[in-house]
Length: 312
Image (cartoon, rainbow, N blue to C red; front, side, top):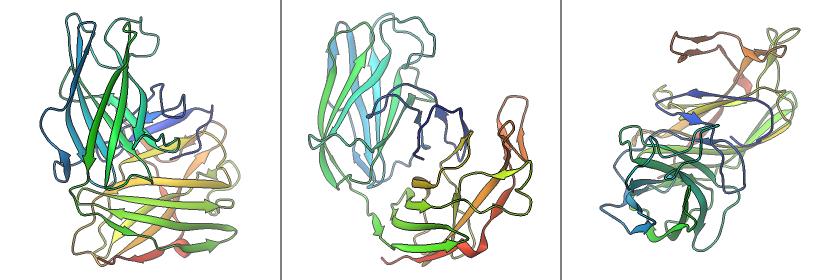
């Protein structure tokens, strides 16, 4: 979600998605988050792509996937004496071999509103995964990717053609729901073979339930998606902001894929309950390893539910 600030942000693992505090986005500093792995279907290309070598370090784009919603790239690194992990950690001594994304261009243009994730590969020690999401990605484009490596002056630059080989259904409902001074408008829903993208704008103060008063308060508004069989689509990530909700939000979130036979979906807005004194989430439970086993109790706002037909 958007609305970056200097407040503490808390991220949760959802449906296999992890968020990590890193340092680079296309707009400067920020928080980069991974949005869960996508299936092998709808790959843009396969095989080995152009490799670049500078000062004894070789980078290769070994896999590129684009399903019309999310662009995912695997970068492999080769070289002697490389550090463990591909990304530098906080307060880590600078050594040769750590990667950082320094530029991404789509058909020669930079998209300042794109959402970017860059993380170590979960299974390969000398690989990293870049995920790029934007409202403006066409079905076919030239990607220019610039990667910097610590202790190497020259950037590693790749230029490759990317094409969406999957079938993406784009729905632009422009439907609005309003209740008690809060409203949201669904701008776009993209449904690919591997995931679902929800794009909406909201405005107004988040309504509070009877249990979200006094020492308690509601969070910003979140949105579940349920299909016509009552099955909820798993959201790829959740972001918690330790501050009072803003009055406007632009939401761009990913969920699991919709069943191809689904005729309509229902968007179900909800909030969590927090204690503003310490911004703890009521009902949240964490195990001994620090993993979230319960995200807290959801408060759904029935009058804000929205049904959207899927036209194929």
